[in-house]
Image (cartoon, rainbow, N blue to C red):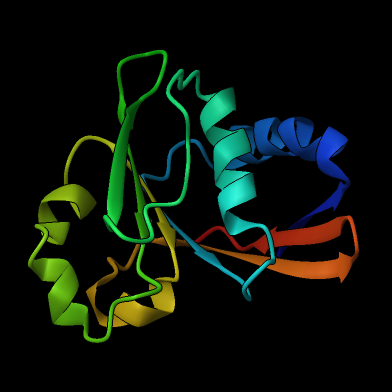
Length: 140
């Protein structure tokens, strides 16, 4: 298990850069964590590292936001908090995204767990203190 400590917002981009260096070959990344654990905040920092110029925000109501990394790679940011059944994700064409040529960053993946590919990288964010988070993952 690899772990990164996020000690305040000022360390976020550096941690996102280290994280991307460690996992850049993965294309489906599922972010687990309680409400307020910092999933969207970390994904925003990761998108900045990737050179995304658009404003990154949670697609809570749209389910997916699409961005473009500096190298032209599509970055799809999903938020499945409001999904009640995994089949709802299929209605937006989830499989095309999961097996496409872009990067899938998924919040609330537990709501679509049966649909995640076997090689999905599972990342866990936990609150350690008011401004501290712990990010952990295990490479398959």
